[in-house]
Amino acid sequence: MMFRRNATIGALAVLWVALVSSVHVDAQIVYPATANGANAKISGLPFTPTSRFVLSNALATLDFRLSSTASTTIDVTNNVGVPKTNAQMTGANFYFSGTYLATS
Image (cartoon, rainbow, N blue to C red):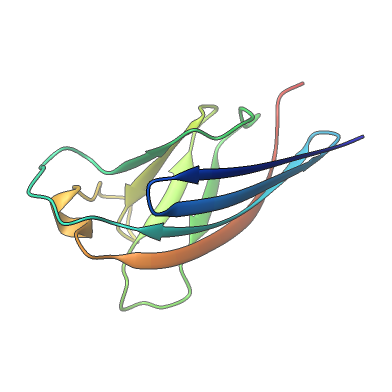
């Protein structure tokens, strides 16, 4: 069985495709200018992952990693796992994609 969802959240365009329990995501994030010092997070995964997953960037100059632990929220950290703040992500414009296993 295949599920497909398109979503737009602010400047974020997302396509979610789930095949049985495998979910693939492609997204573009355009981070707004902010002085907010809270840890950066991306919320709204449509399906809860079964366990931890990590999406690392291919360009070392960006220095960020996206990860989730059985939650519908993605944490934004640097490449060694230290949380990035919203202020540190100001002006970031990036694409990411990945596949994870969802709970049933």
